[in-house]
Image (cartoon, rainbow, N blue to C red; front, side, top):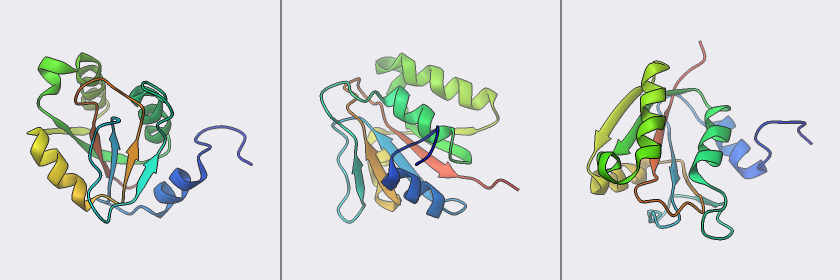
Length: 132
């Protein structure tokens, strides 16, 4: 058993198997999962676990070189705007696109992690980086 950090076995396996430029999506409770893309469903009840808690746990484990978010966050999800701004300050490239395009991008993901988040547009595509 791990002492700390990300404890979810399936999510740990997915992250450990990811290569450079692979995609992992963290989504709210309503984000559709494309056919054929594995879903790691963490949702228990509305709001649990939160997008923020899941994102922070995954971000601590995964080398991320860029992220993609829906441009709707500026009007509808100020918490995700703050996350994107922090990532940009950390040197992570932040791409924005229409929400429908984000759904299309998610078709190429190695997995979609479903949270219990109910805030609108609480979805992010993490593009794996390298550690060397």
